[in-house]
Length: 95
Image 1 (cartoon, rainbow, N blue to C red):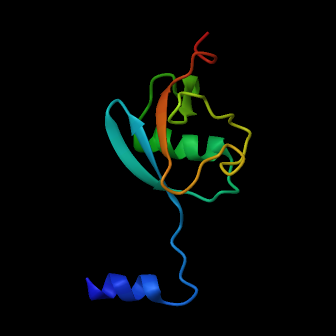
Image 2 (cartoon, rainbow, N blue to C red):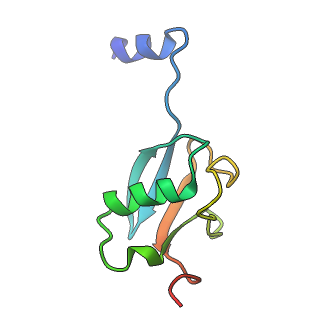
Image 3 (tube, rainbow, N blue to C red):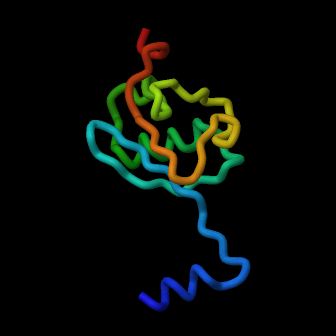
């Protein structure tokens, strides 16, 4: 335990921000960069949750149910470290 504390207290040591993504009741934690696009995190989530049937129909949603735009940066989409997102089929893309 002391090793983890020492790492966190070392000068200049910054943990990568993390977000929790839930799909079908399963939550997983992902590291991200605020300047990366939503579609990059979406691709990581699709791979991690092994979405193989119609992955192009899925999107990431914030906790209020608003779908994040694929072409926005995570920072612009309001995603912060500790945010909780949902991975689910998109009503727009499914049509």
